[in-house]
Length: 362
Image 1 (cartoon, rainbow, N blue to C red):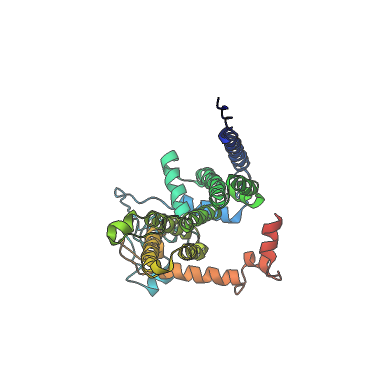
Image 2: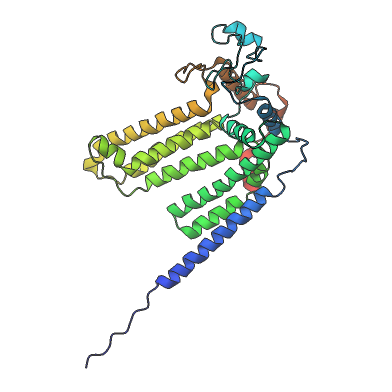
């Protein structure tokens, strides 16, 4: 008589219990992160002690979504007289509000509402302003503060999720949970979440671009079918497209996010090392096509969400706005300490590692 075979215990139930525990820990972490960012959003009680937030709330209260029904008896407050004198054809005296892409006359352009110096991104500003219009039907300092701070906290909570996804895809879920915990409890992120500034938005879209580049670098399907169908159907297509959208949104939130563009070429370089030598030439040509796709997509998104970097008045009016360029140059000079500007004095007589030291410590 044959001896019965001793059944082998499957490790699946144990692994599933571990997975469930990690899921519960992550959900709990997200709830704590949400509470840390949501509690105290009325910080300051509308006294506007944060100078950047005060300025952005001021701008958001002044700009107005364009409407075809608007018919203004008085000319709008367009670009200042100096710019109209320099560029009379590009900056006309408007007798009516222009459309979304009409830089010289749009009611959404901060320059046309008395703010001749505006160097922040317009994507977060427009998102908050349109949401304010939808919720309240009008804009004001308190309304912009309520909506702007809530949006800032929300996108930073999404950043915690992205950190988890990036770390989990590169290592495992336990490492992802640890990384998410570090960013959920980061003092700087919690602080920035309580104010309507561009930082949390730029941070989120930057992490989103990093996430898609990591996904691309770890893509297992390295074979590239010929033809347009093969180009579109490969996972690289959607990942490159998504990266371009994230990059364009990051730059439209804060211009200094431009270096994030290097992430996608780096991702393709890592993937290139896995390609058999015989296929590398053809693969490199196809990868270049995906890089062009991502670049064009990012430029399109930037055009849509930072429209007043260009002159318009239509979508294809792609000549750079000289006032926007001038503002960028002036802001760079301020940051470099070449201009006697009070906020820049905080960097005077500081070592080169000052920022890194504070970011690491706090």
